[in-house]
Amino acid sequence: MIQFTGQCPATGTTPPSRLSVCHLAQGRIDLNQSCCSSVRNLFARLHIQPYRLPLKAPWPAAVGGCRQEVEGWLLRLTDDDFTGHGDCCPLPEAGTENRQAAADALADLPATLASRTDLIALLDTLETTPAVRCALETAWLDLESRKRRLPLRKLLHADASDTVAVNHLGGRACKARNLRLPNRSVVKFKLGSRDWQEECRCLEKWVAIHPGIRLRLDVNGVWEERQARAAFEILEALPVDLIEEPLRRPTLDGLARLQAATTIPLALDESLHVLGTDVVLAHKPVSALVIKPAAVGGLLRSWDLARRALTAGLRVIITSMGESAVGVAATAQLAAAVEALAPGEHHGLATSTWLARDLAAPPPIQNGRMMLDHRIGTGVTP
Image (cartoon, rainbow, N blue to C red; front, side):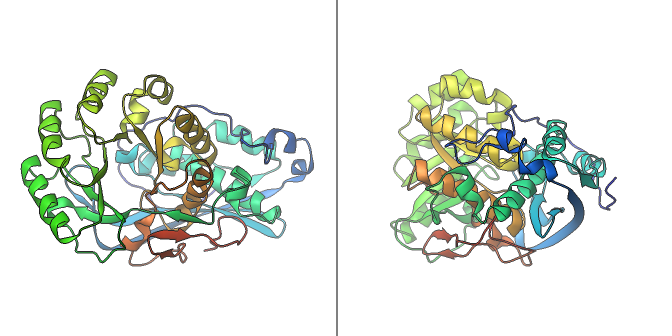
Protein backbone atom coordinates (compact mmCIF):
# COMPACT_ATOMS: atom_id res chain seq x y z
CA MET A 1 0.00 0.00 0.00
CA ILE A 2 1.02 3.60 -0.53
CA GLN A 3 2.23 5.27 2.67
CA PHE A 4 1.66 8.98 3.29
CA THR A 5 0.60 11.39 6.00
CA GLY A 6 -2.08 14.00 6.40
CA GLN A 7 -5.71 13.64 7.55
CA CYS A 8 -8.60 15.99 8.38
CA PRO A 9 -12.04 15.54 9.98
CA ALA A 10 -14.63 13.97 7.72
CA THR A 11 -17.73 15.55 6.28
CA GLY A 12 -20.06 14.37 3.53
CA THR A 13 -19.40 12.86 0.11
CA THR A 14 -21.12 13.08 -3.25
CA PRO A 15 -20.57 10.23 -5.72
CA PRO A 16 -20.25 11.16 -9.40
CA SER A 17 -22.40 9.77 -12.18
CA ARG A 18 -20.94 6.72 -13.91
CA LEU A 19 -19.15 6.81 -17.23
CA SER A 20 -16.68 4.28 -18.55
CA VAL A 21 -13.16 5.56 -18.17
CA CYS A 22 -12.32 4.06 -21.55
CA HIS A 23 -14.64 6.40 -23.41
CA LEU A 24 -13.11 9.20 -25.44
CA ALA A 25 -14.88 11.05 -28.20
CA GLN A 26 -13.72 12.16 -31.64
CA GLY A 27 -12.01 8.84 -32.28
CA ARG A 28 -8.73 10.42 -31.26
CA ILE A 29 -7.75 7.60 -28.94
CA ASP A 30 -9.64 4.44 -27.97
CA LEU A 31 -8.44 3.28 -24.60
CA ASN A 32 -10.46 0.08 -24.84
CA GLN A 33 -8.53 -0.96 -27.92
CA SER A 34 -5.30 0.27 -26.37
CA CYS A 35 -5.82 -2.16 -23.52
CA CYS A 36 -5.26 -4.94 -26.04
CA SER A 37 -2.08 -3.50 -27.51
CA SER A 38 1.11 -2.02 -26.11
CA VAL A 39 -0.58 -0.90 -22.91
CA ARG A 40 -0.62 -4.47 -21.66
CA ASN A 41 3.06 -3.97 -20.98
CA LEU A 42 2.30 -1.08 -18.62
CA PHE A 43 4.12 -1.43 -15.34
CA ALA A 44 3.49 1.80 -13.53
CA ARG A 45 4.74 2.81 -10.12
CA LEU A 46 2.53 5.10 -8.05
CA HIS A 47 3.91 7.62 -5.60
CA ILE A 48 1.79 9.94 -3.45
CA GLN A 49 3.10 13.08 -1.79
CA PRO A 50 1.01 15.36 0.45
CA TYR A 51 1.29 19.10 0.01
CA ARG A 52 0.15 22.26 1.75
CA LEU A 53 0.16 25.62 -0.03
CA PRO A 54 -0.43 29.01 1.62
CA LEU A 55 -2.84 31.53 0.13
CA LYS A 56 -2.09 35.21 -0.48
CA ALA A 57 -5.45 36.05 1.07
CA PRO A 58 -8.30 34.01 2.56
CA TRP A 59 -10.31 32.18 -0.11
CA PRO A 60 -14.09 32.78 0.24
CA ALA A 61 -15.83 29.51 1.10
CA ALA A 62 -19.25 28.52 -0.19
CA VAL A 63 -21.18 30.05 2.71
CA GLY A 64 -19.26 32.17 5.22
CA GLY A 65 -15.78 31.37 6.39
CA CYS A 66 -12.63 31.22 4.29
CA ARG A 67 -9.90 28.78 3.34
CA GLN A 68 -6.52 29.81 4.70
CA GLU A 69 -4.47 27.29 2.71
CA VAL A 70 -4.78 24.57 0.10
CA GLU A 71 -4.06 20.97 1.09
CA GLY A 72 -3.91 17.96 -1.15
CA TRP A 73 -1.82 15.15 -2.56
CA LEU A 74 0.36 14.99 -5.66
CA LEU A 75 0.13 11.65 -7.49
CA ARG A 76 3.01 10.48 -9.70
CA LEU A 77 2.50 7.55 -12.07
CA THR A 78 5.77 6.41 -13.65
CA ASP A 79 6.24 3.94 -16.49
CA ASP A 80 9.64 3.56 -18.16
CA ASP A 81 11.03 7.07 -18.73
CA PHE A 82 7.70 8.89 -18.49
CA THR A 83 5.83 10.26 -15.49
CA GLY A 84 2.27 11.51 -15.31
CA HIS A 85 0.97 13.73 -12.51
CA GLY A 86 -2.42 14.19 -10.91
CA ASP A 87 -3.65 16.49 -8.15
CA CYS A 88 -6.02 15.29 -5.43
CA CYS A 89 -7.38 18.36 -3.65
CA PRO A 90 -10.80 17.47 -2.20
CA LEU A 91 -13.29 20.23 -1.45
CA PRO A 92 -16.54 18.80 -0.03
CA GLU A 93 -18.57 21.99 -0.52
CA ALA A 94 -17.77 21.75 -4.24
CA GLY A 95 -19.08 18.19 -4.47
CA THR A 96 -16.06 16.01 -3.70
CA GLU A 97 -15.38 13.64 -0.84
CA ASN A 98 -13.90 15.03 2.37
CA ARG A 99 -10.19 14.83 3.19
CA GLN A 100 -10.54 11.83 5.46
CA ALA A 101 -12.32 9.82 2.77
CA ALA A 102 -9.68 10.86 0.24
CA ALA A 103 -6.87 9.94 2.61
CA ASP A 104 -8.39 6.50 3.22
CA ALA A 105 -8.86 5.84 -0.50
CA LEU A 106 -5.31 6.96 -1.32
CA ALA A 107 -3.92 4.71 1.41
CA ASP A 108 -5.60 1.72 -0.25
CA LEU A 109 -4.08 2.33 -3.69
CA PRO A 110 -1.45 -0.22 -4.78
CA ALA A 111 2.14 0.91 -5.22
CA THR A 112 2.37 -0.70 -8.67
CA LEU A 113 -0.03 -1.35 -11.54
CA ALA A 114 0.76 -4.26 -13.82
CA SER A 115 -1.53 -3.35 -16.72
CA ARG A 116 -3.93 -0.70 -17.94
CA THR A 117 -6.73 -3.16 -17.36
CA ASP A 118 -5.78 -3.15 -13.68
CA LEU A 119 -5.82 0.63 -13.70
CA ILE A 120 -9.29 0.79 -15.23
CA ALA A 121 -10.56 -1.71 -12.67
CA LEU A 122 -9.00 0.38 -9.91
CA LEU A 123 -10.70 3.53 -11.15
CA ASP A 124 -14.03 1.71 -11.04
CA THR A 125 -13.56 1.21 -7.27
CA LEU A 126 -13.28 4.96 -6.65
CA GLU A 127 -16.88 5.96 -7.38
CA THR A 128 -17.44 7.56 -3.96
CA THR A 129 -14.14 9.47 -3.98
CA PRO A 130 -14.27 11.60 -7.15
CA ALA A 131 -11.26 13.77 -6.28
CA VAL A 132 -9.07 10.68 -5.83
CA ARG A 133 -10.45 9.16 -9.00
CA CYS A 134 -9.82 12.37 -10.92
CA ALA A 135 -6.24 12.60 -9.69
CA LEU A 136 -5.41 9.01 -10.61
CA GLU A 137 -7.07 9.25 -14.02
CA THR A 138 -5.31 12.58 -14.69
CA ALA A 139 -1.93 11.05 -13.85
CA TRP A 140 -2.72 8.25 -16.28
CA LEU A 141 -3.82 10.58 -19.10
CA ASP A 142 -0.81 12.81 -18.50
CA LEU A 143 1.41 9.72 -18.75
CA GLU A 144 -0.32 8.49 -21.91
CA SER A 145 -0.16 11.84 -23.67
CA ARG A 146 3.51 12.21 -22.81
CA LYS A 147 4.20 8.78 -24.30
CA ARG A 148 2.36 9.83 -27.45
CA ARG A 149 4.26 13.15 -27.54
CA LEU A 150 1.01 15.12 -27.49
CA PRO A 151 -0.53 17.79 -25.27
CA LEU A 152 -3.24 16.10 -23.23
CA ARG A 153 -5.94 18.25 -24.82
CA LYS A 154 -5.17 16.70 -28.21
CA LEU A 155 -6.23 13.31 -26.84
CA LEU A 156 -9.67 14.78 -26.25
CA HIS A 157 -10.05 16.78 -29.45
CA ALA A 158 -7.66 17.09 -32.39
CA ASP A 159 -8.56 20.77 -32.79
CA ALA A 160 -8.28 21.71 -29.12
CA SER A 161 -7.32 25.35 -28.69
CA ASP A 162 -3.97 26.66 -27.48
CA THR A 163 -5.60 29.48 -25.52
CA VAL A 164 -8.67 29.72 -23.30
CA ALA A 165 -10.51 32.81 -22.07
CA VAL A 166 -10.78 32.92 -18.27
CA ASN A 167 -12.84 34.83 -15.77
CA HIS A 168 -10.98 36.77 -13.11
CA LEU A 169 -11.68 36.42 -9.38
CA GLY A 170 -13.01 39.43 -7.55
CA GLY A 171 -13.68 37.84 -4.14
CA ARG A 172 -16.77 38.74 -2.14
CA ALA A 173 -19.07 41.34 -3.66
CA CYS A 174 -18.78 43.84 -0.80
CA LYS A 175 -15.02 43.32 -0.40
CA ALA A 176 -14.29 43.44 -4.10
CA ARG A 177 -10.79 44.12 -5.29
CA ASN A 178 -10.13 46.96 -7.73
CA LEU A 179 -8.80 45.28 -10.83
CA ARG A 180 -7.17 46.64 -13.94
CA LEU A 181 -8.63 44.45 -16.65
CA PRO A 182 -8.98 44.52 -20.42
CA ASN A 183 -12.33 45.63 -21.77
CA ARG A 184 -14.88 42.81 -22.15
CA SER A 185 -13.33 40.85 -19.30
CA VAL A 186 -15.45 38.69 -16.98
CA VAL A 187 -15.04 38.89 -13.19
CA LYS A 188 -16.55 36.42 -10.74
CA PHE A 189 -17.89 37.52 -7.36
CA LYS A 190 -19.10 35.49 -4.42
CA LEU A 191 -22.48 36.45 -2.96
CA GLY A 192 -24.36 35.25 0.08
CA SER A 193 -22.23 36.55 2.97
CA ARG A 194 -24.36 39.70 3.42
CA ASP A 195 -27.91 40.82 2.80
CA TRP A 196 -28.77 40.47 -0.89
CA GLN A 197 -29.80 44.11 -1.19
CA GLU A 198 -26.48 45.30 0.25
CA GLU A 199 -24.55 43.02 -2.12
CA CYS A 200 -26.49 44.34 -5.10
CA ARG A 201 -25.61 47.90 -4.08
CA CYS A 202 -21.94 46.90 -3.79
CA LEU A 203 -22.04 45.46 -7.30
CA GLU A 204 -23.66 48.62 -8.66
CA LYS A 205 -20.81 50.68 -7.21
CA TRP A 206 -18.16 48.32 -8.57
CA VAL A 207 -19.66 48.34 -12.06
CA ALA A 208 -19.75 52.15 -12.06
CA ILE A 209 -15.95 52.33 -11.75
CA HIS A 210 -15.23 49.32 -13.98
CA PRO A 211 -17.08 49.98 -17.24
CA GLY A 212 -16.97 47.33 -19.94
CA ILE A 213 -16.56 44.45 -17.46
CA ARG A 214 -19.12 41.64 -17.20
CA LEU A 215 -20.04 39.98 -13.92
CA ARG A 216 -20.29 36.31 -13.08
CA LEU A 217 -22.06 35.88 -9.75
CA ASP A 218 -22.00 32.85 -7.47
CA VAL A 219 -24.86 32.97 -4.99
CA ASN A 220 -23.69 29.74 -3.29
CA GLY A 221 -27.27 28.55 -2.87
CA VAL A 222 -28.33 31.01 -0.19
CA TRP A 223 -31.34 32.74 -1.78
CA GLU A 224 -34.96 31.78 -1.48
CA GLU A 225 -36.91 32.07 -4.73
CA ARG A 226 -38.57 35.34 -3.71
CA GLN A 227 -35.18 36.87 -2.85
CA ALA A 228 -33.76 35.73 -6.18
CA ARG A 229 -36.63 37.31 -8.10
CA ALA A 230 -36.21 40.58 -6.23
CA ALA A 231 -32.44 40.57 -6.80
CA PHE A 232 -32.93 39.93 -10.51
CA GLU A 233 -34.88 43.18 -10.82
CA ILE A 234 -31.70 45.02 -9.81
CA LEU A 235 -29.13 42.76 -11.42
CA GLU A 236 -30.78 42.78 -14.85
CA ALA A 237 -29.69 46.41 -15.13
CA LEU A 238 -26.05 45.37 -14.67
CA PRO A 239 -23.76 43.58 -17.17
CA VAL A 240 -24.23 40.13 -15.63
CA ASP A 241 -22.86 37.22 -17.65
CA LEU A 242 -24.54 34.53 -15.53
CA ILE A 243 -25.56 33.62 -11.98
CA GLU A 244 -24.48 30.34 -10.40
CA GLU A 245 -26.45 28.38 -7.80
CA PRO A 246 -29.22 30.92 -7.07
CA LEU A 247 -31.46 28.76 -4.85
CA ARG A 248 -31.14 27.45 -1.30
CA ARG A 249 -33.30 24.42 -2.10
CA PRO A 250 -32.91 23.84 -5.83
CA THR A 251 -35.53 21.76 -7.63
CA LEU A 252 -36.08 21.29 -11.33
CA ASP A 253 -39.38 23.16 -11.23
CA GLY A 254 -38.06 25.96 -9.03
CA LEU A 255 -35.01 26.51 -11.21
CA ALA A 256 -37.09 26.43 -14.38
CA ARG A 257 -39.49 29.04 -12.96
CA LEU A 258 -36.59 31.23 -11.96
CA GLN A 259 -34.85 30.95 -15.32
CA ALA A 260 -38.09 31.84 -17.09
CA ALA A 261 -38.42 34.91 -14.89
CA THR A 262 -35.08 36.50 -15.85
CA THR A 263 -33.02 37.32 -18.89
CA ILE A 264 -29.84 36.47 -16.97
CA PRO A 265 -28.52 32.95 -17.69
CA LEU A 266 -28.56 30.75 -14.59
CA ALA A 267 -26.03 27.98 -13.97
CA LEU A 268 -25.77 24.86 -11.85
CA ASP A 269 -22.58 23.84 -10.09
CA GLU A 270 -22.73 21.85 -6.84
CA SER A 271 -26.45 21.07 -7.15
CA LEU A 272 -25.85 19.47 -10.55
CA HIS A 273 -24.65 16.35 -8.73
CA VAL A 274 -27.55 16.47 -6.26
CA LEU A 275 -30.23 16.73 -8.95
CA GLY A 276 -28.45 14.26 -11.23
CA THR A 277 -26.69 15.05 -14.50
CA ASP A 278 -29.00 12.91 -16.65
CA VAL A 279 -32.09 14.54 -15.16
CA VAL A 280 -30.68 18.05 -15.60
CA LEU A 281 -29.70 17.39 -19.20
CA ALA A 282 -33.16 16.00 -19.94
CA HIS A 283 -35.11 18.89 -18.38
CA LYS A 284 -32.64 21.79 -18.88
CA PRO A 285 -34.02 24.00 -16.07
CA VAL A 286 -31.12 26.46 -16.43
CA SER A 287 -28.92 27.81 -19.24
CA ALA A 288 -25.44 26.65 -18.18
CA LEU A 289 -23.44 24.02 -16.30
CA VAL A 290 -20.28 24.59 -14.29
CA ILE A 291 -18.12 21.45 -14.54
CA LYS A 292 -15.35 20.71 -12.06
CA PRO A 293 -13.43 17.53 -12.96
CA ALA A 294 -12.59 16.71 -9.33
CA ALA A 295 -16.30 16.72 -8.46
CA VAL A 296 -17.38 14.82 -11.57
CA GLY A 297 -14.70 12.16 -11.12
CA GLY A 298 -12.17 12.85 -13.86
CA LEU A 299 -11.33 14.57 -17.11
CA LEU A 300 -12.97 11.92 -19.30
CA ARG A 301 -16.30 12.05 -17.51
CA SER A 302 -16.16 15.82 -17.54
CA TRP A 303 -15.43 15.81 -21.28
CA ASP A 304 -18.38 13.52 -21.93
CA LEU A 305 -20.66 15.65 -19.73
CA ALA A 306 -19.51 18.82 -21.50
CA ARG A 307 -20.26 17.39 -24.94
CA ARG A 308 -23.69 16.17 -23.85
CA ALA A 309 -24.51 19.56 -22.32
CA LEU A 310 -23.42 21.45 -25.43
CA THR A 311 -25.48 19.10 -27.58
CA ALA A 312 -28.46 19.89 -25.35
CA GLY A 313 -27.94 23.61 -26.01
CA LEU A 314 -26.44 24.53 -22.65
CA ARG A 315 -23.39 26.65 -21.99
CA VAL A 316 -20.44 24.88 -20.34
CA ILE A 317 -17.94 26.49 -17.99
CA ILE A 318 -14.93 24.38 -16.96
CA THR A 319 -13.68 25.38 -13.53
CA SER A 320 -10.81 24.54 -11.20
CA MET A 321 -11.23 24.43 -7.42
CA GLY A 322 -8.13 26.20 -6.13
CA GLU A 323 -5.84 23.22 -6.64
CA SER A 324 -2.11 23.37 -7.33
CA ALA A 325 -0.79 24.21 -10.79
CA VAL A 326 -0.90 20.47 -11.59
CA GLY A 327 -4.67 20.38 -11.19
CA VAL A 328 -5.25 23.74 -12.85
CA ALA A 329 -3.15 22.77 -15.89
CA ALA A 330 -5.08 19.51 -16.33
CA THR A 331 -8.41 21.34 -16.06
CA ALA A 332 -7.17 23.89 -18.60
CA GLN A 333 -6.43 21.07 -21.05
CA LEU A 334 -10.08 20.02 -20.76
CA ALA A 335 -11.27 23.60 -21.24
CA ALA A 336 -9.12 23.86 -24.38
CA ALA A 337 -10.87 20.81 -25.82
CA VAL A 338 -14.28 22.32 -24.99
CA GLU A 339 -13.14 25.53 -26.69
CA ALA A 340 -12.97 23.56 -29.97
CA LEU A 341 -16.69 22.82 -29.64
CA ALA A 342 -17.90 26.09 -28.08
CA PRO A 343 -15.41 28.90 -28.69
CA GLY A 344 -15.48 32.13 -26.73
CA GLU A 345 -16.60 30.92 -23.29
CA HIS A 346 -14.79 32.27 -20.22
CA HIS A 347 -13.71 29.38 -17.99
CA GLY A 348 -12.95 29.47 -14.28
CA LEU A 349 -9.22 28.73 -14.35
CA ALA A 350 -7.56 31.81 -12.83
CA THR A 351 -7.44 30.34 -9.32
CA SER A 352 -3.63 30.11 -9.12
CA THR A 353 -3.42 33.86 -8.56
CA TRP A 354 -4.60 33.28 -4.98
CA LEU A 355 -1.68 30.99 -4.10
CA ALA A 356 1.39 32.42 -2.38
CA ARG A 357 3.36 29.31 -3.34
CA ASP A 358 2.69 26.51 -5.83
CA LEU A 359 4.04 23.11 -6.85
CA ALA A 360 4.98 24.45 -10.30
CA ALA A 361 4.39 27.45 -12.52
CA PRO A 362 0.76 27.43 -13.75
CA PRO A 363 -0.09 28.24 -17.36
CA PRO A 364 0.33 32.00 -17.82
CA ILE A 365 -2.60 34.36 -18.35
CA GLN A 366 -2.21 37.16 -20.88
CA ASN A 367 -4.94 39.67 -21.73
CA GLY A 368 -7.59 37.52 -20.11
CA ARG A 369 -6.57 34.27 -21.82
CA MET A 370 -4.72 31.28 -20.39
CA MET A 371 -1.90 30.34 -22.73
CA LEU A 372 -1.18 26.65 -23.32
CA ASP A 373 2.03 25.86 -25.12
CA HIS A 374 2.83 22.72 -27.08
CA ARG A 375 4.56 20.84 -24.28
CA ILE A 376 3.41 17.26 -23.99
CA GLY A 377 0.98 16.06 -21.32
CA THR A 378 -0.55 18.74 -19.13
CA GLY A 379 2.41 20.99 -19.87
CA VAL A 380 3.30 21.20 -16.16
CA THR A 381 5.95 19.17 -14.35
CA PRO A 382 6.28 19.74 -10.58
